[in-house]
Image (cartoon, rainbow, N blue to C red):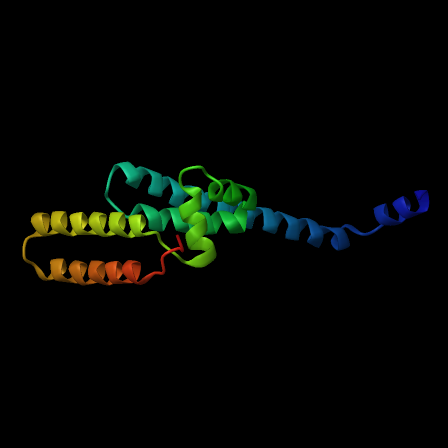
Amino acid sequence: MNAARNATTALPSAIVAPARTADWGDRALARTWRTFGMLCFGIGVVNAFIPLMPTTVFLLIGLWAYGKGDPALRERLLSHPRYGASLRLWVEHRQITRKGKVAATLGIGTSLALTAWALGNKPVLWAVACGLIALVAFIVSREEPAA
């Protein structure tokens, strides 16, 4: 055993250094994914209370980023008592409950109404309306879970 220890310590630093560099790179990448996940998740939580941007999209992107940078935190979010079931339903089956579809459609409709009120009848409103109608069509077309 002592001979093996001496053999590893006798290796030139050039041979050992790439392993440390790769390890550092992996940690930096994981840290980047965690940071991106925290940013998206934070935006999603803030938008749950201040409806500036969509909440669910940011939560899902944050969940995806956590899967790359911190799988334990991703699992913790998927097992959350309030939001975990809906997140897991989307991640595993790409399904949305009827209640979720109704809430999303009402939120998007409210957002469109506020945008129309703020902008008036301008071409940008029609572009936003087309995008939101396409989003509602996508949400409504998703499969619902079996009862």
